[in-house]
Image 1 (cartoon, helix red, strand yellow):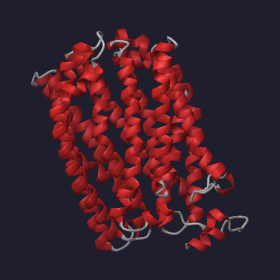
Image 2 (cartoon, helix red, strand yellow; image 1 turned 180 degrees about the vertical axis):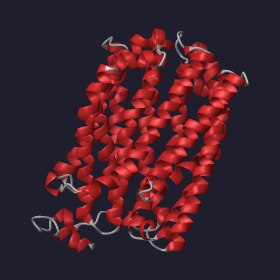
Image 3 (tube, helix red, strand yellow; image 1 turned 90 degrees about the horizontal axis):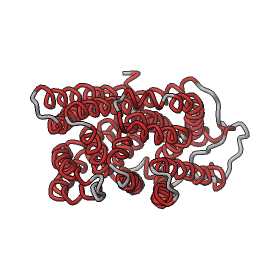
Length: 477
């Protein structure tokens, strides 16, 4: 379908100013893959940096309440990741479906895919919010929270009550990414992070709300960002994609297009959560809840390292989707190779920086009398994790290609190997059977990530080569 026929297929057949305009983001998305990855990933990287700063600030303020409070957040995190994964996974599905239609010149189809994503998220929120809220206590007790359970339940119930805002924001971010307009995502994420950072000390300490204050700060900031994102879609109306129920036409093929990528991508987060639960259980078994606090605090730092890789992989999803929709498979190879090579160089630099700065970084989580005894553990954790940083890019960029081309099940298979086979297995063997304890868990994470990333990279190269050789969609090959 051409751009003209896509526009005139709307019910009112009326060309509006939005319909006549081709946004700069779409022009970048369908142009040179290397430039597109850099242009799209840059704002995402900044947005995620703000998000990471908020996560770090949140953990730092919570750490001031003592190690029990910090560990409590660690026990909620795996549960939180599951429904965050639903939003992010379905967001990846929406990004893939919309960008492929943009690449094919089907604007009406892109709008309809966007509205399908929003409809799914609204229904999903209505179902899982009451379940999470009601079952918070048995969940955290089953995870072994023990003496930290009171904090975990208080924090978790507030976070889970705002599920709709968290999931809805993910879909709106995905729409901007799909059309290559990531600058607005950056502005929204920055506003949310700043608001959260300001609210944290006010609510936690000023209002005397403790760990509940941290949860409310998170919820308020995410709700605010939803309002801002909707303003651009509904009031400014200057985006390529239209958020308008008039553009919605229920279609099984469109829904399946989203689910084909979205469900596997969501399950990837579930697998990461299961792996985190396994790791928490191993840590409690071999070292106690202090080790969970080390893991929770240290992983907040690792998230900073992951930012450039996640941003580039999200960009790869959009670029790959547009190239696949236009059947320009050579662009897939260029995008994949460029992202992997650039990411590997970034990983090497970050590894060296982490190794030398680990003791100084650890201090930010150990400034209070209740948490200063964790300094050595967090330092050791960071100095071990840095060994897999150069191997992050091959795996993440390969997953981006799979998701962009609608092959989410491939990315899911690699994630299964990485989390539930390699990481879980090696962490258990090294910690328990070899007797390395907490250190064995850290090295299990490193080995698992390296093996999983390598498997994903080799699979992606084979997949791209097959596409180029066939010169047509796999479905008709």
